[in-house]
Length: 259
Image (cartoon, rainbow, N blue to C red; front, side, top):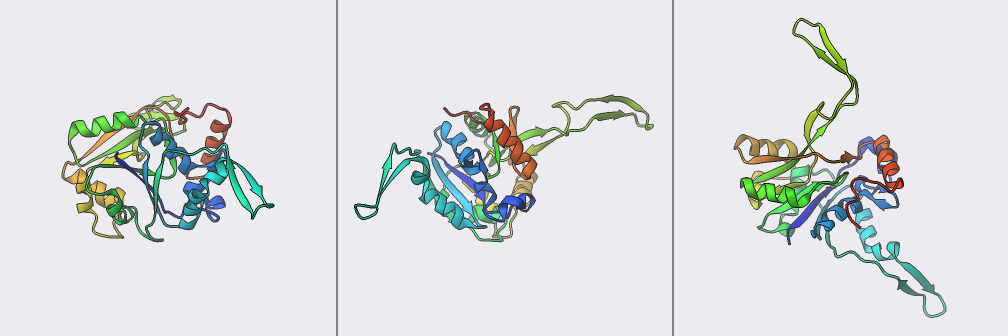
């Protein structure tokens, strides 16, 4: 089964209210880390083999997975019989999770290079540890296989949130209108697929995936983009976290595609 790499090693400086205590991917939406939400999206499509590129406060990620059954099960602590711990109504995911300490200051491309031995010589998926969406993973894979290039990124029209001015060349305002989903730039939202040849373009820890690797693939005509037209939201700030929290609390979180 194809492996899923998740970049989870950054400092999360723009959400420092929470990230000074834990890595950004471990910040909760509902009662579970956003990392869990991302993994549930992939698991919904049958992809359960994860490689987590940890770095900043990497021990938090390892400890959370080590205690996952404790967090998600009813537990009896029997102090009358040698401090036994009995898991009841135990819930477990069908996951195989490898958490790798990829260094504190390693760049995104370098983090990917450091987990190459766990990915192996086969195609793999990779995404960021701070963004969720109702991305059709199977469709992204079909698109990747159809074009035959080294890499595929998922693109999203990240609409701007202000009114829009249509201006003629002479400076005259032709129209003022409210924003729409057609306004804004197409951005890379992760949910990427790569052939193993991508590792040839990562010389070391200082390599930045977004600029060095993707830039080079663009230069040689080996990068394609799948346009996602559904929901996507990252969690860079506390305001964005509150948006995701409110959506989850409503019971209608768009990224919750699993049962």
